[in-house]
Amino acid sequence: MDEIRGDEIRGKAEGTATVPLSVLDLVTVGQGRTASQALRTSVDIARLAERRGFHRYWVAEHHSMPGVASSSPAVILAHLAAHTERIRLGSGGVMLPNHAPLVIAEQFGTLEAMAPGRIDLGLGRAPGTDGATAAALRRSDRLNEGADDFPQQLAELTRFLDDDFPDGHPYARIHAVPGPVQATAEGGVQSPARPPLWLLGSSGFSARLAGVLGLPFAFAHHFSAQNTIPALDLYRESFRPSAVLDAPYALIGVAALAADDEREARRQVLSGALSMVRLRTGRPGLVPTPEEAEAYAFSPMEREFVDGWLTNIVHGTADEVRTGLDDLAKRTGADELMITANAHGGEARLRSYELIADAYGLPTA
Image (cartoon, rainbow, N blue to C red; front, side, top):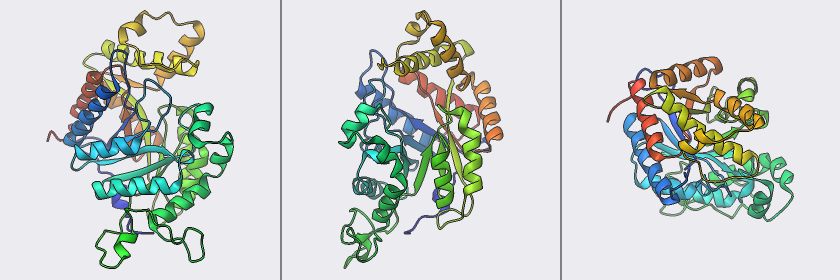
């Protein structure tokens, strides 16, 4: 394995935070807004996150969802790299079964060349969409096969990233470029370093695999809260020290939104909840406005879903959100919290991250 060190993975808590704080971006698009506006908001949030001492900024891969413009994480990350200088940037994640491992290695090798030492490659095995869209992405309707082959796909990707297929392997003379081969070629001065791998999950499969391989693990608490503690326990129990980590390192994705008052926070998260109702019932669309969400007549079944959904979103004033995040970190033992703030407008999301940064006394420059 080429040059990967634990200090490229482990974050540093800033201000009064007990664990490092990071950002997960879905590039949400609200009604009356464009994808261009959403992507400009992503730049604004990434700059804010860098200025205020958030540790990393990840973008999640989703497809065929009008309200989520993050179908191409590598493209977005290249754009963010051009507008930031220090913050770590990465995928949370790239859905490995949707792509050829060589393509991912090339994309993230390119990103590493653009922003050396700042790129994370987080990988998931879910499609990030519905079955029909996944079939279109993969040119196959054998979707379970892709998920079942995840360990083999991961091993192949790792070989491409490290440029170390053994002699006699069919891919031994194939190189992911940019990549380590440029360091060993005659006259090469390229750094052999490559992005650290993370495994993402919402159940136990990737938790166990990350532990066995000694990789860092990111759990999707924001939509699978009931599985968080069992998955983290499994990760820690399965962990074997590796060249990457000598001890487990787990972050969790957390849905959190702070506003200047509790009512405004409730209005903002309700629009996201209505968006999820429509997604779960086969009616995906742009994120509705808070006004539409407040006026919407939820059916009893929808209301039950919304109440459960909102229970797992830390929202309220900055102090209330800080208390909720601290309680969650303590309860789960997470090493890092990655905050996603889903709302209709970019202004509310920017304000939320600013308020959270203020609540923890994060750096101001």
